Length: 166
Image 1 (cartoon, rainbow, N blue to C red):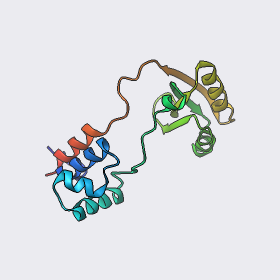
Image 2: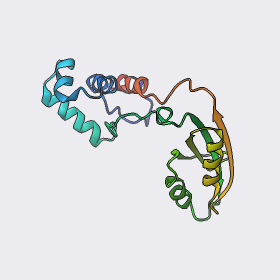
Image 3: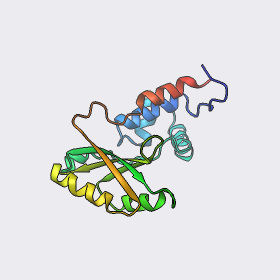
Image 4: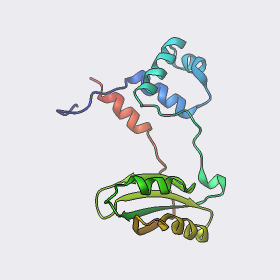
């Protein structure tokens, strides 16, 4: 079902199967993917190039688990900032902190939501101190993630996008 004004679907079933295959077997390569999907190598390469050009596939880099690197503590931190100069000064400050994994501008009570990691609770305090050590950060509210029930996933979204195709 397509709603008026909805964006046209940018992938089809073959694209969805290719994305799923690359997600499950990232080292499969173009030739292996063509064999697995039963299509020509050139077709896989063309699809992959198109998906990259359209920004559907941003990277083929490995997915890193911060806990396996020694950062088992994850927290979400909502920041209120001085907005007179915009967000960029704070984003630049946060981008220099290795434990800041994501930065999102938001609506609502806060201006930014960030995902951070730390080695333990004491280290989390150090990371938060580093985050708020910026004249543009007015307030921080942090929630520690106790259990991750679902990591970021895109598989179901890819399948839904492929079904939207008319």
